[in-house]
Image (tube, rainbow over all chains, first blue to last red; front, side, top):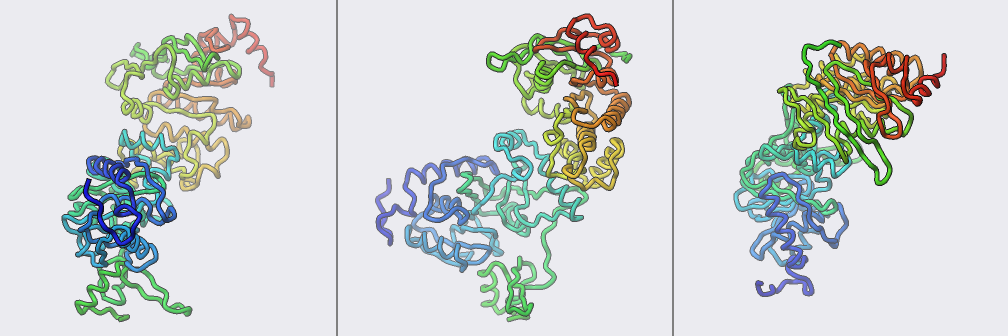
Length: 290
Length: 261
């Protein structure tokens, strides 16, 4: 055992969770990394925040965090929304680790709904907060049956969902939680990230870990793993496209949020990744709304 | 019913099942040849549906075995197949039409998706081809092409059964199990459904095991009849022979109790 670390908040173990729990989570993480895309059950603990706020992601982060890590937390791409601020403050207080909003400076990035626009690098870990880890849940409510379907790689039903999309909308209308096949084997729900981010998961140099607290599942995509979005031959996978660039920084290749600016129909489209937007503006880029 | 191949498609030997101390069925044996239709008749609780579940492997049998001739000609014991192989067989070479269409269909998925599921399950990844195959099958089971994107919840009982049949037959199975497919439907709808089943069975050369309590259904569809009572087969033979000249007192009672229209 390493000697106890002095942390700003006394009375708690480093990063809140006790060491036995961290060890249990790390075991699940190792198994998840060994079987890319496979959902490993784990004994999720009660966390001092409600389900839906990222209890799964927080536990994974707590289990992997070291004293020298630099933590970034984003919620919908933003560093300054309630969820992101709370979780960042939580680890700053219970682990005393350095925090940042800069993607490049972070070693651990906990995220809800987005993958940062700046390319990730080797040595970085992306931790996803996952609400519903089971991609087959839409068609099959029985857990015993979905496990069997995964075990036998019976993924025909997954395409039924995409078929229904095309039949109803004329194109694959699933825009988030878009199912992917990992390393040619398991079909995985990439959590509610927009499908815009799916291509970033493929062959990514960073380690991607997924934690679902309420559903008590952990899964992972190791670095440089093939991640393929499911599709049909005559309806290939496509990401969203925006017909205008970011109003603040002028970026045209990013995921945009719609922001209402007044009650008279005024609106602007800006980068969902606030750090990326700021970095571009610091570098002198300007959009038409800036 | 002539086939140049004398080998049975399905061979059931001494199949039995107890639910605790209660008997489901016991000692059931029969051969089914390609293109042959076997009706299993008997009153409620006689073990007909248990037998069908045992054959389909949905309920593990206590005794006996079920063997099926695979496409490579091998007569395989279903319990010895791997789970993956068994399920693949069920999805491609077998069909199961259930009494309750809500159990046999995906009620939250459109008619086209219901028919297409098996195709996607065997690796079809071309939307246009899946769609045209679904349309083709809707036509074969006499459902309007304009209903392809409707959910089965908006279908009548007869249409749901026809959709179930299309969903099962789309991969060209060789064996179809049917559990009371016409019960709960009114008489004119029943007649139309039976007509359709009879046509498809003849056209596709399907082997069928149909469970029914309705002797008229057995008479109309089947070549052979197996009469069950209290979990055991009490009489078996050609349909006309059994229904016109029943040997067992119980079968005589069954035949005599049909209401004359």
